[in-house]
Each structure stands twice: as structure tokens, then as C-alpha cells.
Image (cartoon, rainbow, N blue to C red; front, side):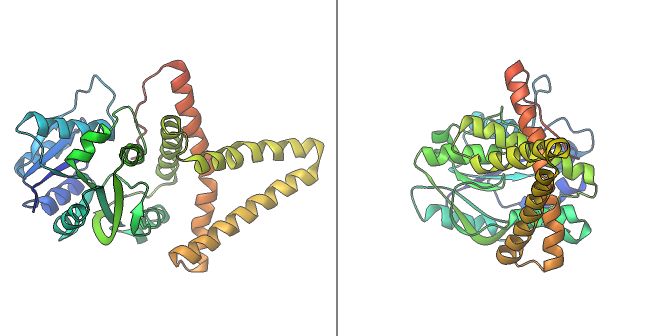
Length: 324
């Protein structure tokens, strides 16, 4: 079996990072921790766990993509990276047996450039926001077009695609996956638990900021790959801007128009709830509750999209949007 190098990233993760390090210990040839200016004991915890620590230069905007890529560059500059790379975020813990299972699946097909699995939430019952994340992580197994930041990648495929783009502040994993596919590599999701994630979202403000970041990703990745996130961008424009403007216009010009828009939102909410019941197996009351937030998310998504375009038009740096 080929050797595996593990790259994990974090910023003030505290106990979550310690859990991540403990789950990864002994599962990789080398373990690299890339720190993005932590002020807690993250660096000391990583060193105590035997990880090689990389400190990001804080004079440049830091992103998850930049951190992951600098972890890879560190491996390359200090003996060369292994033929297989496992990326993981510091707020996750590896599931037992994942590395070996993923290795076998990755090597089963010479053109398979990436494999991923299922991320699960540690405490989905702690808040509706954690529960929403749990639903978000669970996607069908098989051949896929993209995945989240927890992934196992062939070194050859990573180099072929050019690695993570440090300028992308959100959905950077989707963006890398786009380039992997365009380079001729296939991506696969196994029906196996891969990581346990701790979203730790308990406040509406945190959920809102995360949705803003998601919208920024829709716009930035869509700008780089126009065919990707097309439906998500259109939904944000329609439900986050055009429908509200139409409703406001109707208040003064044609009240029936405002009523029609409100009915359209109601239909969208019910359709979303039906999808959650049908595809995710959620109980009707839970699905209706989740659908409220998924319907509402178009507004912060639009804000994030507009923020990206404003930054692009004014030439400002693409700075990370933190929600915790």
C-alpha cells in the first residue's frame, strides 16, 4: 500500500484540534499542521502530537486553500510528498479505518484522482444549525463532481490540477475538483464515514455569516468556472433580489403582485421541505423547520455574491469570511 501524508489546517480550534490530532496519530507517514495565526494552544498541541508545523505568513490574506497548499509545498520542499495526500480540517476527526479503506478505493482505478466519504456532525442535536450541516454533508455515494475539504488525493492528480488556489476563500474544494475533472481525473465518494465534524454553531449570526461565505464561493468559483454553481447563483438572484424587489413594487403599484411573490416563497419553502423528506428521510416537522433556513439562505448568499463582485471590481483582496 502506498504511503500517505496528512495535511490538516486550523485556526484557534482548541480541543477540536486535539481530537483531530489524536484521530490522525499513526495513520500517516508524515503529519503536517498548517496554522493560520492561532492565539490559543493549537501550535503547541500539534507539536506535542508529532506534527510538523507550518506558520502562514500573516502579511498576506490567509484562506483554507492557501493553508492546504502551503502544507503540500512544505512536504515537497522537505523530502517530497507521498503519492497519496489526505486533507482534513482541524475541526474534524478521522473515522477509524478510513485511511486504509480510502487508499484501496483510490488505487483501484488509475484515473481516480480523489476519493472522499461521509462527514458526520458530532452533535447535530445541539442546534438547528448543526442539524442543517449534518444534512448538508450527507450526499450520495458513487462518482461525483465535487466534495468538501476532507479528501484523499493522488499527488499526481493534485500536481496535474495545479493544487488549491489560495485566492479562493470559500468553496475552494469545489474549485479544485473542477480542475481535477477538467484534467481528466475522476472523483468518487465512498459510502463510508470519513470524518466527524464539530460545527459548533449555536447562534443565528454564525449561520448567517456562513451562508454569506457560501454565497461568496458561489460567485468566485462561478467566475472561474462559469458552468459551475450556475443554478445556485440563479436561485440567489431570483429569491434574494428579484422577488423582493417585485414584492416591494407590488405594494405601491399592484398588491396582487406582492401576494403572488409571497405565495411563490411559500411554494418554494414547501418544495424544499418535500425534498428533505424524500431525499434525506427527515420527519415532516423537522423538514419544514430546516426548509425555513434553506429558503432564507438566499439572502445572505446574495450578500456574499455581491461582496465578491465588489471586491473584484475594486481590486481588493479576497479575505476570508469567518463565522465563528
